[in-house]
Length: 126
Image (cartoon, rainbow, N blue to C red):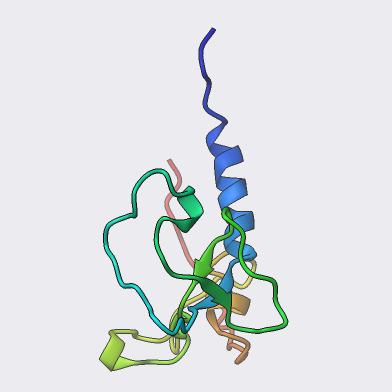
């Protein structure tokens, strides 16, 4: 008898589902916040080892569970240029109008629309 890992695809799909359902949270404003880098002793349940409470950023949402992914700040936008953060933006980049991936025009152009330039390419055959 031995333990077996799930397939890489299964793990990836599970992480992607959690990422898509991640919720924005904030640390609760406890009257006496305890800032610690070390966990409290092992006799305390794992979820209570670090003494802070995560609350949903939107009060209408439920609190995150132990297996939910959470984030504290939204990511910066990558569509517009932001030299301070080193983001070049996507203006003027070439995209693939038939792709639904990150190189696709719909995603890369951030809903601004795009211009198509027909090209004629000659390649040698082997």
